[in-house]
Amino acid sequence: MSKDHAPAPDTRLTPLAARLPATVPFVGPETQERQTGTPFKARLGANESGFGPSPDAIRAMRNAAKDCWMYGDPESHDLRAALAAKFDIGMEEIVVGPGIDGLLETLVRLTVTEGTPVVTSAGAYPTFNYHVTGYGGTLHTVNYTADHEDPDHLIAKAREVGARLIFIANPDNPMGTCHTAATIQHMIQTVPEGCLLVLDEAYIDLAGDGFAPPINTHDKRVIRLRTFSKAYGMAGARVGYAIGHAALISAFDRVRNHFGMSRIAQIGALAALEDTDWLAKVRAQVEQAREDLYEIAEDNGLLAIPSATNFVTIDCGADGVFAKAVLDALRDEGVFVRMPMVAPLDRCIRVTCAPPREMKLLARALPKALAAAREQVGETPS
Image 1 (tube, rainbow, N blue to C red):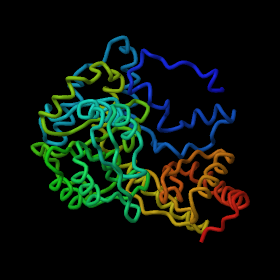
Image 2 (tube, rainbow, N blue to C red):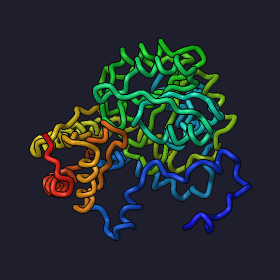
Image 3 (cartoon, rainbow, N blue to C red):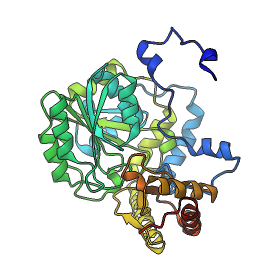
Image 4 (cartoon, helix red, strand yellow):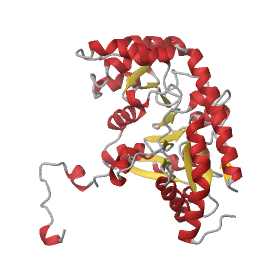
């Protein structure tokens, strides 16, 4: 459309909203399927759990469906009580929300206004940036170091700019790397005055021991966010929770959507939390799938980055142009994967762990995708 025929700006929008681009942090596989007219054979890009939720959770949600005419409990009381008991904290120190994404939006709404400085890593989880930008905050980024988010550099940048928030994911998305509990605890202890560390622990249930520092809800410097989307296999139900100092957690009640939680999702999450045997089984399946992905990468002359998550990031050996060509070629083979979007991380593709059928589909598709990418861009990964 020419400038002469461009639509007039909508004066009903706030000045901030009017100047924001209309963007979606992630292009969903459904969108790509609609564009191509072909369903994916293997859905390996969104870090969902193809191993599924607990059968107990499925039964509980099925039984709860008849009561979906009722709103969910606005306090998520039973789920919060169970989580509080699990972590030996007070119910007033935990808030439930519609996934980590929803909790991040509320947290940013509470703390960020136009010009508020916020620090994150270049290439880290983009939905956090989306919310910060949506409330007018100013993002300051630091680079990854050896494919890890860099706690020391994040803290230094926060001091430099007077940041209100620092965001770090441990384990990390999109690289799958992880810092030790001692490293994260040191980071918490060095958070500047007036700043809050936003610790995204979406994948912590899959990381094993030694990566999560003890939960200390008396420490006002950190808020921890966890989810039922990954290890618990309930991404579509949208259930997450945040743990922190009671004063900060109570502030969520000032602005959150009190009826944002589905009754069915609340009941399903409670049943999933109680089924520890299923969680252990999923962890074992993820560990095996990670090994499968390491082997697939090696068989194709590629380097898999050791992962503490339910995905493996694979270095394609060249640059972002080549990795994007591999991703596109995998899509043409019916395999949905994603890739980091910032150099040098974008030399990689990111592949979700999945049951053996999907791993076999990837194993067959990847050599073809690499050959197509090399033909397209003329790269020979080293």
